[in-house]
Picture 1 (tube, one colour):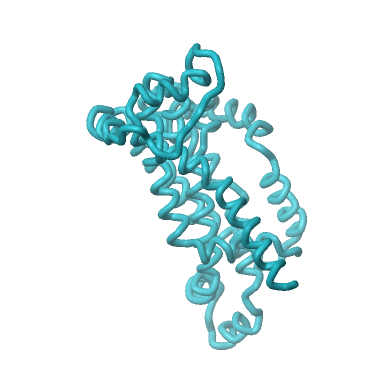
Picture 2 (tube, rainbow, N blue to C red):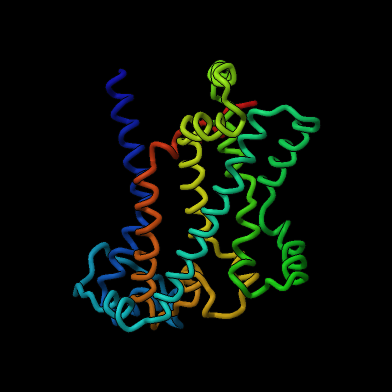
Length: 282
């Protein structure tokens, strides 16, 4: 009976994985299709043709034309790619610089109103961007940062979610270790630097991975705060793709997936620990 249950579980997991991976397979096969083939399959969706759209798993006439056009004949792609990289790295650096000390203070120091601050962090973390969009827009416009990369970077730097992840890890450090360090004469800064950061490294890395994935794929923030096309990240390149550029759109989607996939795979273990820590109750 247990063996049958295990087999059924494996079948369901396989089917679920197939459904989840289908969009990626869909995009990969589209990269190697010629333009006439893409137009034939996607015309009912992106064009004016009637009928149902269809999609084969393998192209009829494989070609690298879409990749060549994207990587050689599309300077706009590289501008947007480097914009995405700049935004993501700046946001990640800011979240680390400001978030790590904030998480340590919330986890290891007692001060009046600490629970209220934690509750405020959780409330802000649960708020979608649409709720804060208008206040952020008005503030950024007032200080003259609209239509600059700083308009996207600054609000994301002070996101509460990375602090919440790191707070869970720092809270899990045994107090006995910190007390032993104090007895040996270590100050608060030394304890934070030599004990807190090494023991909380998994939380810092996992929050960094989640922060990178979020900033790499953000659409609403740059669409709201950036008007100049030369400042747009790569995430705004794909929505402008039409039927005539479908092949290049699939190629851009795969190129955008690669950095996120590499970051995810390199820190998967830390990411799992971060998700597990965030799920723990106070």
